[in-house]
Image (cartoon, rainbow over the protein chains, first blue to last red):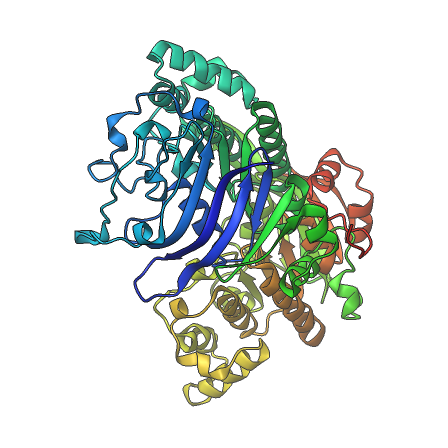
Length: 334
Length: 261
């Protein structure tokens, strides 16, 4: 398989002189694969997802390269909206589909298969301005930049905070389709209804007009997924997208993600703290710890023949339905 | 005799103008030094039962006996005395504490309020509590927001055991912890149970955790008990539809032999 993106020596610091959130992480995300990135708190797994999506705070210091290979056909909706100019967007820093693209992805190649490259110098470039904002130069054609919402779909942990509470659900999904596929509102709303059917929400027609608070947590996450895939992205990133849901709903959402990724031929980056959940979905697993990539391999290799002691520790800490109960280990009786 | 006996407990709320029972005729009991787990999907009534048992809310019907006395009939000094014997640990200790208080203050409060230790003796008692939960005594002077999540949950457990309870309600107490920390906290809870004979009402959505530490389990669905019994037996062979769904939905780590291929 070819790489959809190649990450090399990616280093992120949220504060100058602070502890690095990511330290020289290098890995390839292969086109069409389901890659799980697992780790505990402050392992850097969410930072990696945000860096790929171009959602890191402007004050963050970024080093290394992310090299995209997005097929030309995918990025040739020739006219990206003017709001992609990162430094003038009023929505700078907000997390939504129309946000400006990744600083990392701002430098694009010109080949039919656009190869987008950022050098370490660009990542830590000068031009730091007031409020920690960083001026990023846009030196390549805009239509080859991987754009969040169009080329990358992002699903967050908490749909209550990623959905607009006062906008009807149909409009929130249609907005993405309208912006990136250049549809009319009428076409975009029709597309939204199809998407609500695809994510198996009951009564899609009525749901178009519903507000997020009228839905359960699992239903809201289905809406967030519908919005994330509305523009037909090549890459879907799910950042702890099932962690706030109960076990049964979690299994349903994982099944939904698996089906949509397979039907649309998307590449999936699945961020999770749960090694068993990751193993149930992913072809490959990357294990992060304290900002470093400690191990990357095929799921069966990670689960059955982990090379790193930390991976083994994570596997041993998993409390499965076949594990020896701690009660017995302690010799406690009822 | 059971530490906690819940009978026909019912709590109704209104949703969209219509009444519905969040907890519907639920009965169970918890014996001394026993762990009873409450499991079930979101909205099954687990946390409402916890709040009823802690008497944070009043039931519409039913009865709770704690240490042999009708808990809802108690008031004033008798209620305060009994409350010291019933403690709680929640999912997020940062939300449960004043973040700017020091660890010493958090642990000193119950000792003061319940008259367990005079002022001069409190520093020694606080140090003993910290040691009991595996923390460095030097942590006493630190603020709650300065310590790690795992340390904070140990402080929450130390505060819970400060009043020598017979029952601790643990509401998703290990759900937010990293797996490496989670194992240590579960070991600590089991050790305390063995040494101090504390009973736990252990609320969790995670059957793997329940199976690891609970003696018995009650599986709830829409406010009613779907099934109950020995934790391992129920999880190995669930009879109810919701029990089967919970087991089926639990992520399985399928590990074959140790050879790489």
